[in-house]
Amino acid sequence: MWMQQAFSLLSSAAGRVYYRLTIAGDPVPRSGPLLLVANHPNSLLDPVLVAAAARRPVRFLAKAPLFTDPTIGWLIRRSGAIPVYRQIDDANVMDLNEDMFRAVHDALSDGAAIGVFPEGLTHSEPELAKLKTGAARIALGTAVKISRSFTILPVGLVFRRKDVFRSAALIVRGAPIDWDDLAGRPADDREAVRDLTNRIEAGMRRVTVNLERWEDKPLVECAEAIWTAEFEEGGGATKNRAHQMSRLELTTSALKVLRQNPNPRWDAVVRDVTTHCRRLKRLRLSPNSLAADVSLRASMKWTARRLPLFGLPAFAVAGIGYVLYWFPRHLTGRLVRIARPDHYQRSTFALMIGIVVYAVWLALWEVLTWWAAGYVAALVGMIFWPLTGLTGVWVRERWHGSWTDIRSFFLLRSRRNLIQSLKTRQQELAVRLEELQEEIVNR
Image 1: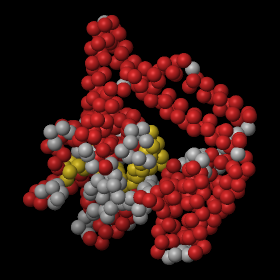
Image 2: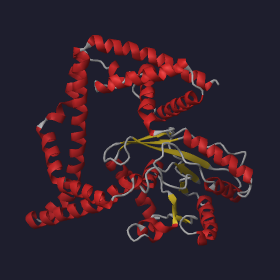
Image 3: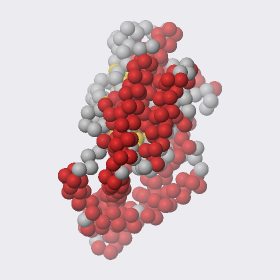
Image 4: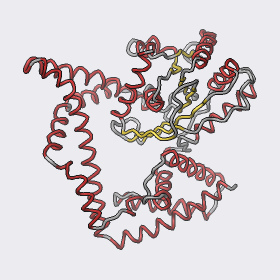
């Protein structure tokens, strides 16, 4: 049990170190049986992120070969994972899945949280794969055992660039699946299994972005950003990321409908949004930045808030962190390139290799500190060296964001006529997008 608790805490730490992580949506129930159903775009990092979002111990279903893997098998076993036997791994042991279902039913009956990836495989496709029926069978079988329904919670994992260190990642905890009317029907009831699987898929689609092709992603994201910038309170500040995901899904659905039913009027909207987004990209602006306050008072407030970032302590921490971790950072990248993992496994390899490389590197620094300054200095170093590295990353990211803000400020101030025309155009596009989405919803 202690390993499950530790895995939850370490998952949150690892996820926030590797990604610029945002967790949105309603809190997860702190106790009682819970089935978490998530998409699976990122190999072994997906359980890490789901556990981080749950903020309680979670036992995951994992494919059986992982339990005997010489590198991570020990972690899989000690984390409380439950083996799943897949036909593509070994068709001769499929009967053992009966033991899996019993173990999951028992765990849920005892009030545990179980994590499942209903797609059944990791992939890099732009939308959900067809769901397997295992999650629905688990839920129905447990409901019969405990004589009631329980919480099935969809979790969406959305990445800006999932294989890039410190890229943006979003975890959305969706609304619980409504399935009280199905509780009590057995797990071998095909109609109930199919119905519940469809409800789970609908819930997962509401917290993920499901594109027909990856080339649509910039258009969909920019269309959502235009709507948010013009209609969200606070100059476009997205206060509810779960709401943002629902708008992305709505925009994606609208694009699919337009492709299936071409309409010159709405084709023009898509074309105009694309043109507007390209103009903003060339200027290195975003839809939200057009509404930025560039008055002298606002700029003075912005400067006052960021002055500490440009002081000597910030430069010292950023410089020390960069120099101190230059070697393990480049060694990790080199080893990942040598390993040549698949695209969907790259971040998993980077995290696992990085943990080993950085741990060895920090251990060497601890030995050196002990030898040079004694054990007290070494004890201080156990906190100082990792904290310096993390703080340095944070400072350098704030520098990058500040430079972007500075550039946008001078552009908005110096090219007022251009910016005003872009604002007017964006307001018009936002209204047209609203009309399009309302028409799609009302069909």
